Length: 319
Image 1: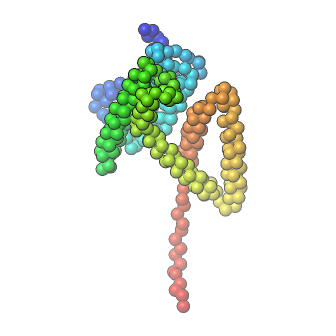
Image 2: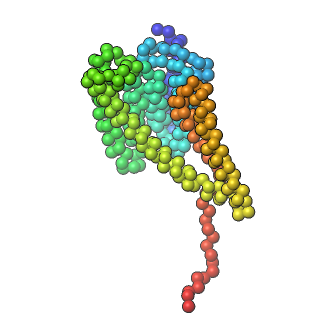
Image 3: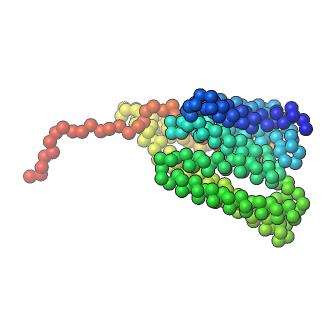
C-alpha cells in the first residue's frame, strides 16, 4: 500500500477530516460550542483548493484498486461541490452557530467526495451512508420548529428502507455478475436475466429513496426561485434609479439579459467542444455561474421596496 498516493489522491477528504477533528478538539478545549465557523470555512476552502489543484495538475491515481479512483473529472467535481458549501456556511452562520452544525456539514461533504470517486458498490454505499447520516442530525438541529423531530424520524425510517433496498440490489447484481464494480450496472441494465433486472430495479429504487427525491424537490424549489428572480429583477433595477434615468436602466437590463441568452449556449457549446463532447460538464459549469451570480447579488445594497409617504391631507367625502 502506497501511503503517499493515498495522502495525495485523497487530500480533499483528508482536509475535511482534519477540519472535523480540529473543530471537535477546539470545542473540548475551550468548552464553547460557537468557535467552529472559522475552522469550517478554512477546511472547506483548503479542500476545494486541493481538489482544484488535483484537477489542474491532471492527477490520476487509484489508491484503492477497483474501489476508489481519482482523475481530473472527479477532482473538478469535488472542487465545485466543496466550493458550493462555502456560501452555505456563510449564509447559515447566524442560524446555526453551534459546533455540531459545522462538523455535520463537513462529514456530509466527506461522504459526497467518496461518492464522486467510487468505482465499486461498497465504496458507493459507504459514501452514501456517510453523506446521509449527518443529514438526519442536520434536520433535527432546527429544534425551534416542532416539525423537526418528526421530519428527522421520517427521514431516518425512509433512509433505513433505502439502505436495505440498496444492499439487496447490490447482492442481486453480485450474484449475477460475480463483481462489485459499478461498471457492471449498464451491462445488467441491458441484460434480460431476471436476477440482473431485479438488482437494477432495487438499486434505482434505493437511490431514488435515498437521494433522488430530495434532488427532485431541489429542482422544483430552484425553478420556483428562478421564476422569482425573473419576476423581481426588473422592478429591482427600476428601484435603483430615479424617474429621469429609468429608461436607461431598463434598456441596460434588457441588453445584458439578451446578451446572456445569446452568449450562454455558445459558451456551453465551446466547453463541450473543448472537452471532447463531454456534455456532463454542463452540470458543473451551470452551478459555477449560479454561484457567481449569487455572490454578485449579495453585493446589491439597493432595490428594496420603498415605503410610500402617507398623505396628510384629509379625505374629502363625496357630496
